Length: 210
Image 1 (cartoon, rainbow, N blue to C red):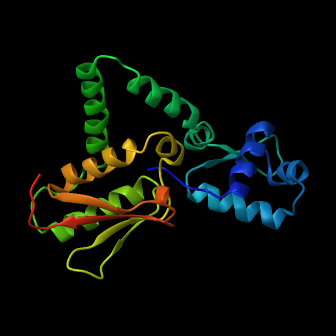
Image 2 (cartoon, one colour):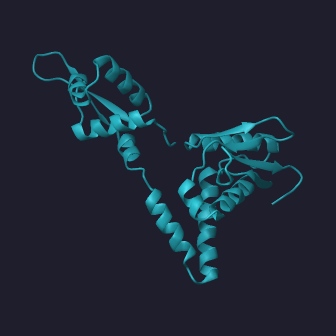
Image 3 (cartoon, rainbow, N blue to C red):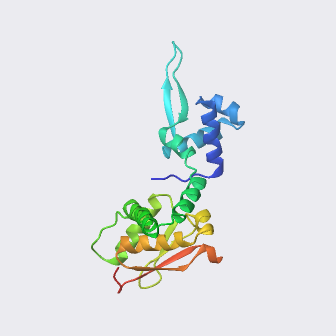
């Protein structure tokens, strides 16, 4: 599961990493805030699994706690794949052999299906849509189900691939196709952030099969 944090938490993690860990007092001196604020932030980030606490016993004195980034916290700081994703996406579309290009794009699509597709194949389509929304949310995407109509509408409140989509809107087509395959139903992208909307909406048709 990918964890989302705000800019202040991200900056705090960076400072803690540069400090190579430390006590509350050492962190306070490094970041220039009160002990109460540091403890609150550490507690929240520890709850998210991004910070680890170690009890250190030295000599006859009272043990103290040292805080440092967990393995998940280190991975979080390294999760900036935007530039690499753009380069790779452009490289795929430059493949001159259409058969090879289609095969590569097909593999990318199938990997997305496997990544987000832990959805029950049977049961009601409405339940499958909610399962997909939950799976996407677990992956860190800001997605919700709008239950106003006959079937829930998947709404992405922010584009997960803004840079890719601005270069090549076909990523939106691929995402729609991925949802269709996961739900085993026809899915249409009826609103898109690229068109100036504040969110993307995916409508599912109950009568069609993919």
